[in-house]
Length: 384
Image 1 (cartoon, rainbow, N blue to C red):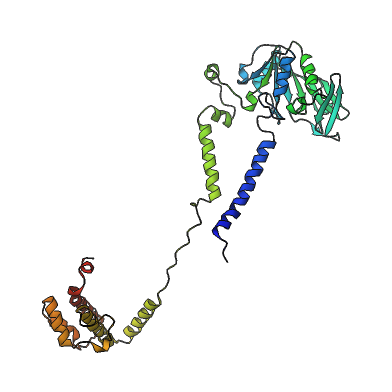
Image 2 (cartoon, helix red, strand yellow):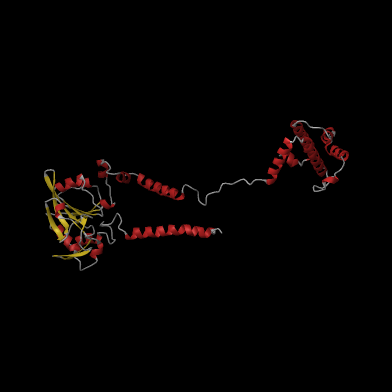
């Protein structure tokens, strides 16, 4: 018993709906590429911390241009990301000019520390939800611990040599140290503790929240005129219209792979020709008669069929009349001559009992029989 078409479509749509629901949940609940941005108001964003620093009197701005445009001294660039990125050469030079790079990202190795741990600081408890810690032996000797416990470092200030000058980085092993989710708890001091760390940096003028890192980018004519080479394929596509085209082509490619390059609907089954038993029987009988050289027998059968067809077309009998009650040959020839106005000589030769010794003679007989029947065919049949 075949499954009804409606139920078959429902069975096909059910896994698709499950995948869509799972995908929506993942996109809704999991941190996105914009997580950590000062524009992001989700639990993983830093918008509340950005506004907190403004309320505390810090000069904060959002940085949405490429890093070669950074200039000045005594500034801070705050980066919050789920993955580690090495500072580019432009950022290294900017740090050597007397600026500080603050990076909150996943760093260090898992330890035996509890996953949710509260550190007691002078500003209050700081909540850290990770087992990751960084051991002092894993970093350069020139560092100063800022947040730590018995399991290792959580935040530290590292000084590195850049050329003949030094630059400093404030790094944390946990990207969500100042996430919005912690700002909603008044008993936590995550915001106040990090603000105190930033305030302790020497000659801090402006704190830039890196929006370029999360895709919030504003290109100015100065950026275009610099002619900076693209840093990656995605950077190149973001500068051209090929990004949108590539995304559309990707969607089309996924759709074609999902459809297995087939049209809508079930695949068409190959039509198998149904054998005709009558045609097979006739062909087999003709082969037997040909091998037996029974041309006269075949001619006699064809003469009987010719008499029947002429009588039916001349109106002397009904189409389904008994073939044994046909008019005599003279009557058929007289009726045929009266209708066609032609000489009955050819007709008479077809009804004679002449011996046939070759297949060619039988084929000529069939050709003459068609000539006799042709004047009696309907006009539309003769035109076709």
